[in-house]
Length: 143
Image 1 (cartoon, rainbow, N blue to C red):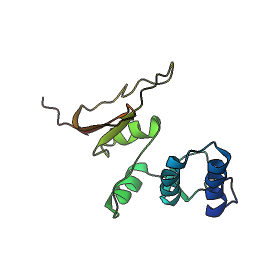
Image 2: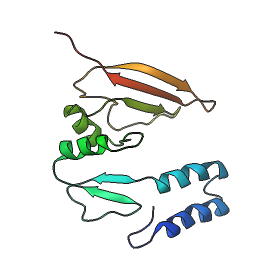
Image 3: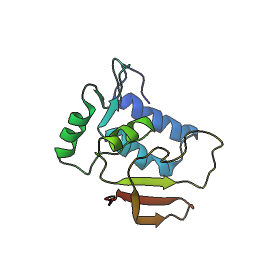
Image 4: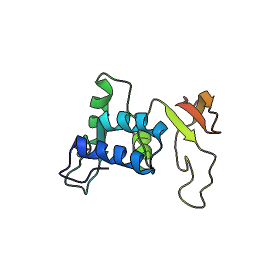
């Protein structure tokens, strides 16, 4: 990621330098270029600024995400643990999509631990690498 004060060219230069230096494979360059161009939002109560084509989100999370959902585009992609749970509590998640890599981690939060709503699988895709993409939607809980 670019350091504060460096722009788009400096960051992309990092990918190109990494590719030429051998720490980024050529097949990763299209993803690097796509993620570099994408608009990014950072939700934080402690940061004072962000870089890498990002906007700092503060204030009412629910209202802000509702506004984002009304804008044109293919939707919002969210990462981390705390933010997705906050959005789920506000019932702002329309779909969950997980890319499961065939790698084990020895610690960290349990996937979906504490999620209050039920979800069901609506699609899956298996990749030659062994990774699996799973897409879920919240279900209506009947009393």
